[in-house]
Structures are given as structure tokens and as C-alpha cells.
Length: 173
Image (cartoon, rainbow, N blue to C red; front, side, top):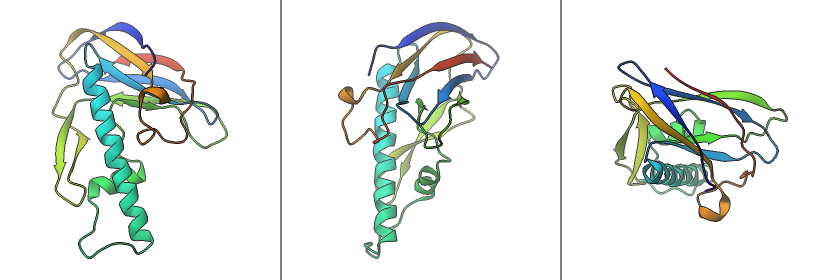
């Protein structure tokens, strides 16, 4: 991971949220990790766990598609959400996509909770939790760092890893 861009931001209200605007593009744009205050290690750990969970789901989907499943092999609804792209990676801003254009994207962050998946994967998945606030009201330090391939194993980084990332704005709500 490269050194982060860090700034202080005030969060108000009883249920603070963070929204970050960033550029998504098809050429050389990568992924960034977002964390608050001293949460770097927790954010990276959650991201790595979710990345491995996503990889296991995709492996199971491939096996099912190619009729290489046993009688007890199935994947959960959380796996289906990952594969469809409806369940975001925690703490991640993905600046890459395959469309040959560039445009601004906004991503909101809220609290999350760990849910044990009792299936063939036997893994933890982090799901959005509307009842859990992101942070307490007040001033917090926001950090955003490009996930650099040399600091994360090849198993955890997709082929589309890029070296560029552009933050266009951040706001709390």
C-alpha cells in the first residue's frame, strides 16, 4: 500500500456517514483502501478477508458451471451478492472498470458487521449494518491509500490492478 492521503473531517448527526467521489476509468486505474483514524490494519484485514471470500465464491461458481461440484457443494446468498457485484468490498474504492470511458463515481461508507457463513466456504463475510454507525460524531481523520501490488499478495489483487487513482471529493452526512 502506498502512503495515504490524509485529511480531517467533521462528522455530525446521530448516524454519521462518509461519501467519497472518485474517478473510475479503464486504463491503469486501481483500487484504494479507505480508513478512519487509526483503523488502517482493521480496514486492510477486512478487505483481505472479503477478497478471499469473493475468490472462493467465484471458484465455486466456476465449479458449478463446469459440473465439477459434489452433492454437498453449494454457495450462499452472500456469495451470489458478491458475484453479482451488489455487495461491495469493505473499505475499498475500485477505480477500474472495463467500459472505455472515465467518469466520477460516489461511494458511501457506513458501519458493517461480521457474519459467519455456515456453508462450504466456512468464512467470515462483512455485511452493511444500518444499525451500526460508521463513527461517533466529531472530528475524525480520513485516510485513502492506493493498494499497491507489491504489498498485497497476487492471490488478493485482481489482474486489473492499476497505478493511478483520483479522489475528486469527500463529504460527511
